[in-house]
Length: 252
Image (cartoon, rainbow, N blue to C red; front, top):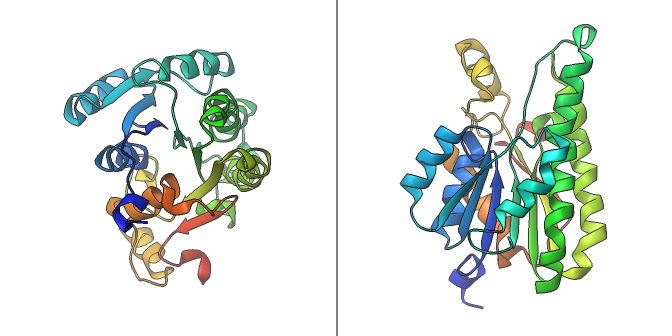
């Protein structure tokens, strides 16, 4: 196969949750650049509208709160309206309440698990039938350093991201026989809205960089290649995997 065709998404439709900022927004831009039509999902209408205006005619937005279980079905219906049923789903929406173990609230726990773990499954469940009919699809979940490591103040977030690894494997077992590959990408420390408290401390920022094999924290562009790989025909024989994009943080 032509190497360029391996990574082309021409004719594909992608849905990216959490598309209003951070790695979700970056993912949406990468998939657009590869030729896909992209529907971004997020809670903040102003940021979504700004993204669509910048992205052009192959971008559309659906405003919705995936932490509300009863909203998922409506969101799934709406994302299929602009360009047709998605071939690709990237579950990038997430939350980290950073509550210490002794202070975790039921509300914080439930919201974290609902958005980070339940929403990726139930949204995929709604979108997979159309992928199955086409015989091709991609689901990419967002794992984390906390999929494998325990961090202070991260018990709810870590539980959700540990669950993502097993959810991804279970999705692969259920759906890959129908041509729907399911994988997860695990970012290290990237400067985003979600990690702002980490990067606000210069000493902590330097310490995290030193814990990687490469010696620096992630730049948004570092996600481009791995994400495109997992969303494209280049990953036809890759499923059920967690690809850590962390500069070797989890290797040390």
